[in-house]
Structure formats: structure tokens, C-alpha cells
Length: 589
Image (cartoon, helix red, strand yellow):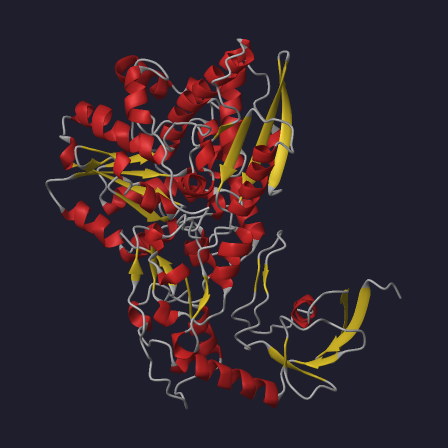
């Protein structure tokens, strides 16, 4: 028998698992359903929440006096486990009753209702009354930021958010504080999230099993705008949304619903339905031009030029950078994100085209990202007190709006985006997955640099799901060294290596805050750690890219027209004013 394998028996069934596996791992191999609450294993990463704090997963192990938590008990050779004895079931019910005894009973108005794992467990155990009364002691006011809401009265101390924030994202905002009924997971000194180093990536909300951490919902504000006869309401949809929106309507992960999404938004009453992909193509025009300008000057010996250039599309990553790398603020591209470029163009170029004052134009974003809510509230992304983007809602919020409107989503015919801010190329579509932004930039930059049309625009070496990746592309006589990271913990590793000089110099780096990129964003339908779902969403975007008649951003005819009629040229005076930004030193390290 190899030392790396252990054999055990669970509910009378034999199973073998690698040494180091837990009883829970072994049970799942046998398709035995052991309920969990605090446990979370993000597939494809070493991240496992090992707090074993909830005790819902207790099992009976032969020869042991006490029940053992399946999620944290190693599987040993010859072990015999029972997961369904009366003692086990009674213990789980008691634990659940104690958790509920101090939990608010406002399920009807809770943002997590229907997606709450505590609620699911209560139904599974048929709890219709509770023997214990914890008094529902309330100690915490709700912490409301532009992107997230913390309602710590609903915290069950599972520590999932803490594991995600500290171990995966390495942001370090959340940790356990206080004792007894006052015990909670919170920022240092219990400061509000908005005053902390939180990046608003929303990954904590993606793993929270209850309503303790949720996105700030702007869907009713959208309805109010749509109901206002004095407003013209336009909507933009990010590329990753179309690859996940079908999931709440029973469609398999990775189903592209672009046309149905457009039809649903039009049916809801939006005056214009546009595509953030248009602005992604615009972003490439600016960002790729900026990259080529820096690279050319660098190769000419200009020592004032800083490389590598860092992509700046992800607002959570930008805020992380502002807090953690204030000495490198001149390194990221100054190009705004596609969301903000769209808002700036909508409230100038498009508003002029349709003859509507910008104060009467409402721009709504549908994003896979909760940090986008924070981004559109940043002061620099407004003009004369008027925000470029008025509000951002998540993929989940859009699904709820469609359901609220009683729209038969699956039965909708496919419709096309409106013009002129709805035309896009395949390069823009892949912005929604890790490696996509830099691949889109390379497609244009290489053609501009060489003056030759690319025979193959698929840069497979830039694709994949490894946390940190490197690739070298040969462009003429130049070997272009590119770095890619997704997840802020991986971004930290890559940037620390760049800062220390322990890796070969990069020319460009793409970073996305969320695992998998935007397809795994904090505002997407919950995937409960199943990264295969995220991969399928990414594959869907590559399929849409492959099917596009144009796959390079600089070939978008409406982008070409925008420069001819309005902007002039990339990096020109007008585009610099409307499409570029600057960064700030923020507290924290």
C-alpha cells in the first residue's frame, strides 16, 4: 500500500483518498452529502477555510468519544465513520438552533433570501421552532459603503470572508474581534469599510453564507430613473455579464445570452441599450497607444519612462495599488476603465448627437464587479458635479430586475445593441476573462508596431487560469515580456517580484482583482467556489470573440468614426481630458 493513500469506511462504504485529505473530502468522493456552513474550498487554489467553527459537519468516528468536524478531521487508515446516526443528526440540529437563536428573523427582506446557506440548512432540518432564545442581541449598525453593506448582526463567524480577504486577496481588512455576543468579523478598530483599505472587490460577498456581507443594491434607483419622463436612460453591459446572466434562469454555465440580455433590457424600458465592449475597444485605442509610446521612448533611451505599464481596467486592483504601492503610481496606464470611458463619451458625444443635456441623461452600468459601484462614485469621474456613470448594478441585480418585471427570459428573441455605442470587436469581448485585456491590447499594438496585419490574432500563450503567468511574444526584433495575474494575492506576488527585481523585467502586466477575472467577479451569480463554472464563462467569451467579424479594436468602424468626429486621435488633447485619469496615495500598506 503506497504511503500517500489511506483507506477508510464511511457509512459502510469503502473509500481511498490521498493522505492529508479530510473526512469531508472522503465523503464527497462517495457522494455522501455532509452539510457544511463555514467550510469553503475554492477549486483550483490552495484556499480552504479551515476554521471548523460552525460544527454543522460533525460525524461519528468509531473509537472516539466526541463527535468530529468532518471538514477539519484528517482521514486516517482504517477509520470508520458514520455521518447519519441519531446522535449526529441531533447534534447538528442543536448547533443550528444555537446559530439561529441569535440571528435576525428578517428573511423576507434580507438580500440573501433564497441564496442563504443558513436558510437552506434550516429548511433541510425542518426547523419550525427553536428551543433556544439568544435574545437577537443587536450590537452593530449597518456599515453602508457605495459598493458593500455589512450587517454584522447576521454574521455567524464562519470566517469565510476573513479567509478570502486575508489569504486569497491579501487585502487584510477583515479579522475576528471581540468575544461572546459581541464577537464579529470586522476591519481593524471596527472602522467603516469606506475608511479602510478595502478594495470593494466583493469576493467576501461571494463566499458569505448569510446576509452579513452583500452588495449595495441600486435596482430600485434604476426603476425610479426608468419611471422619470424627464430622463433619458441608457444602459451599458460588461462582457462577462452575457456569459453568466443565463444561470439564474436555469441555463448551463457558459451559455451566451447576449441577444436575450439586450431584448430584456429593451423590454424593461431603457431608451438605449449599449455595450461596454464598445468602450473596451476605445480603451485599447488609448491604452495600446500609451504602451507603444512608452515602449518606443524607453527603447530610445528615455530614462523618465517607467515600464512595465500596468492595465487599469479593474477598479478593485487600482484601489489595492493606491494603498499598497504608492511608490509606483506612475506605472499604471492612465486610461480610464471601459465603464468610465463609456460614461464620459455618453454624456458628451452621444448626448450631443441626440440633443439631450447631460444632466438629463442617466447612464446605468451592468457589471460583474461590485467595485464598479465604488468606481463610479469616485469624485474624479464626474464633471460639474454630474457623474459620468450614475449607478452600477451587478449581474445578480439585473437578474432580479428581469424576474421582477415578469419577463420570460429564455423565450426572448435575440436582439442587437443600439448604435453607435453598441458596436464592438472580439478583442473587447475577452476583456471579461484573465489575460483578455492584454491580449486585446497586443492585437492592436503589434499591428501598429510592425505595420503588418496579423495572420493569427489568437495569442494562446496569454490565456489560462494559473494565478501568475508569464509570456514572451516576438514582435519584430523585440521580445515582448508580459506578466498576468488574477486575484489580488497573486497580484501582490507578481508586483513584489517586480519591485524587488527578482524577475526578468516586464514590458506590460495585466492584473484583475477577482479569481478568473471579471467572469469570477463579486457581482456574478454565486458559484460557491466551483471554478469550473468560472472557466465555462471564460470559454463562452472566447467563443463570442471567435465568431465576431472583426477581432481587433482598431478595426471597429464606430470607434474610427468617434475619433474622426469627436476625439481627434488617441492620446490627443480631447481624449486625454475625457478618457484618462490619475491615481492617489492612500493610507495603508
